[in-house]
Length: 424
Image (tube, rainbow, N blue to C red; front, side, top):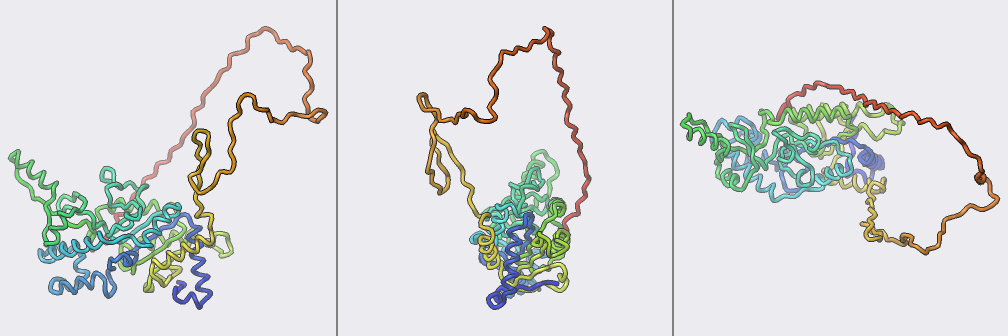
């Protein structure tokens, strides 16, 4: 059964206040938290979500009534079959990117970075294409810094971008990726698609050697549309499987309506693993672990009964600010700043706000020896030396022989097969 905690009702309902405080304590105590997010966490930054009355789908339908039947149609891979819908898509995404460039990370984005800095975030998974998590300090899976020889550096990635990144472009023919530049945006605004530099270079090389020319692909925004596979699907499958194996102790779902099939599957798999680490009895010490929390103004669908434990009725920024406030009150030691002693030229100083009240100097010649000496007639005093002499035969001692035993290292190799991420 899902417990509903309405943020507005907490003033009059003590059980709601207590429930919200318990969730804050769980966040403070858990050490392997998985967070999955949707467009709702970026609304306070001025970026519209998708399905609300003033969201992107409604905006697309209002702006292009003769091109799309539903706003969702502009985010479907089939749009590339028609030149008109393709041009509209390029123009709309270019305008959306300009809005995103003018936005700044909100409280929820900074909360994700806070969890990571406190070594509590196992991983963040997001449906968002705005890249605000990266600007808050979390390395995203679509960035160049996260890739090495076309593979994702799974340990360094802190935020998995399930729907791609609007700040990048990808060739429709050769799949080469590039950062999205102002030159790209100027062409997208006009409904045009820039040529792929990789394809151009290969075509010119073939012409130079009198070979048959090849088709030059066009660039498109590197976001993942409905009914198309994710270019990094295999890598995302590896990351997800690794995170499941590490047994996360809490799952937080924020700002999403949980409508996309691939995303729903990911959430259900994490929820099942989180519940497996929950204590069997509430009286156990770790009753703060094993919780699945859904933070959204609208309730989850009926299919999530028994999967989501708590529904916090609030916007995500309000809830995370409450969590941080409770956390600081409940566990102030988590917020203490480590001070470092620095010794320079014999002086001791600190890099914090502490004051050095005493200092010691190295002893020099002529200073009085203050070392405590043993008193007379005290117990445990060793006896005075005697004239006893021990003699041994003049035989050379045997030469010591040392045998080195190398440490035995056993390696267990496992073969993993990871499912392709189902895409969106």
